[in-house]
Image (cartoon, rainbow over all chains, first blue to last red; front, side):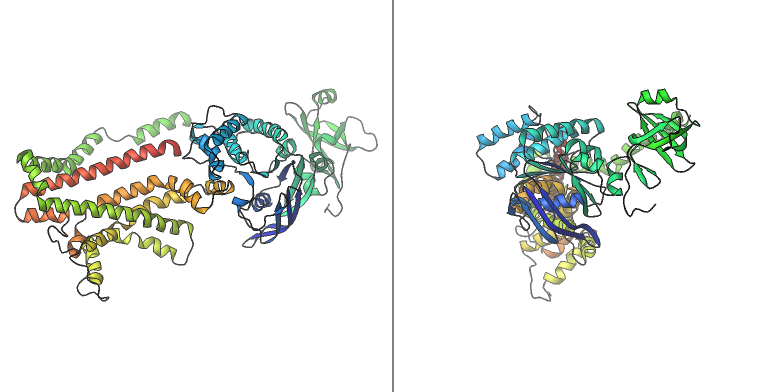
Length: 321
Length: 272
């Protein structure tokens, strides 16, 4: 395993940040630590990096015990949400920092920096200062800086969190491609399930300092182990005891024995799909997601009586109804 | 309607009466510029020769040398210990931190003569610890150290407070040990603040009178500083000598102030 975390506990005063967390990250994988804020995902990443020390438990990196090692000796690359650029150094000096610390020959450093700047598409910007770069460029510089020391694992803490939506989606796709090229074991933290699903091979979903479920994105989406996972991985409706995704709500104009009577409340055009809010038996509103063709065929408008049926639903044992 | 009216109201609300620039300039002239001009005029009265003679006379040169040397020593000392104390206040937590923090401004707030007397009580002829340093150059330096304590601390403190801790964590993750992180990441970011604190301390030390006069004994060629020298020239009715020395001190202060602002312009270019 590239990273092994075994029974780690971490408290900040009375707050339990990590509660008996164990995790295995295989070499060459791209893992997303996903969860709401305060779920412990960043703390777990920082414990792996050695920026926080665990109260109890062990951390292994590349098969070596690292629990008591300082971050300097863990062979990691770390990327921060707000870039942590060395503001007083040029872009090239930022990237060269780890190599200069290791006292590599000047020519080698120069060549490697040029290579890395090319890799992160910052050719020709080596003489600029971080303040002269955009947010997306700064984060790519930070990534090049972390990769320069050829780390055993690359750790990214909400790497795209400070960027605007368009740059964020560009960088997601780019990170995915970069990982496929470099094959360096990567763990990133995010609170955005879409980002996790788009980028990660494996998602580790956390809540209240614990790992709730881990698996491939599709597994978590299609086979959530609990109501929390179901809700966190996407939009969800509650019809009786059943949990239904909006795209699994079927709307018909005639009853067929398994349907329930409902009334259309709102019809929203979301661009690539239509969202229809209905109230079932005068109760809680249910959101359905329809294609434009379906919605047109049904001729839906507010006030119209319809019949709904979940085409795929899940129930969870022990959830309060 | 409000969106249109708002900027207009703000524009007219922020404007001062049109006489304001005239008032400000007159005020500055009366309070600062005219006296300075008078001093300059007075110092030139005897011609360039008399000016040069007054400044380069052996006792004046000795006073100037002592003043500049002591001020430089004090500024360097403050750079080290001021940064250290600022670091302690910002980064460490210890009982009584609030008291220490407010104590730092005391030397600056104290009337300088009181500061001198305070030091005289401990290090003077009636010292309870038997340590008499009056009539020595050590006394001059000690008085200046007391007076200039806050400058570096107070200019480094806010910068250190604002310093991005993640820069240090990033450097550590790249393999830099504590002292390397300090030298290559922290210090370059603090340097402008340290230098501007040093400059202020230096300027203050060059002009200090009250505390030094109490402690140093004011022996010409030995412990007489420039400001005391000026006073003694006036006492002996040698106006040209007093004004000439004043002009030299003035020029030094001005040079220091200009270099601070040049420094700030340079350092703010990349850091934000």
